[in-house]
Image (cartoon, rainbow, N blue to C red; front, side, top):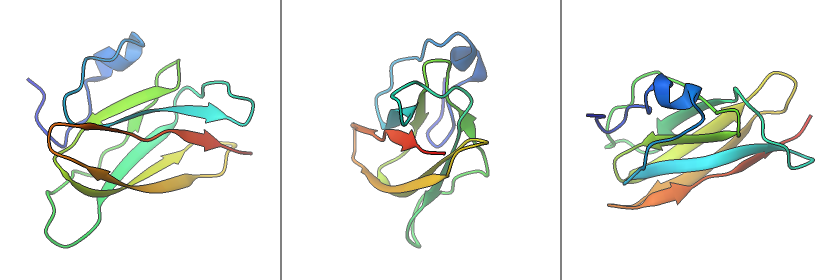
Length: 108
């Protein structure tokens, strides 16, 4: 069983097949031409003072540029970075029982 605030297992990412997600964030990382970027580092930080603790972890996007992370409801800062591209950040709200889509288009 995967607990909240933990990334999906690396086994799922290696196969480019992500498990169904019931709550958290998911998205795709693309370049300016619309091509997926594999191996993009995704990190998450809670915004505010009373949020759930998040371990200092990063996850990587799959070969299709996709990622997902189970998170408890709250306000988060999601960051995406990859060598050769400008990093990006987005503030997002995760609602109870919902998956929030957070896509990024990285530019060189």
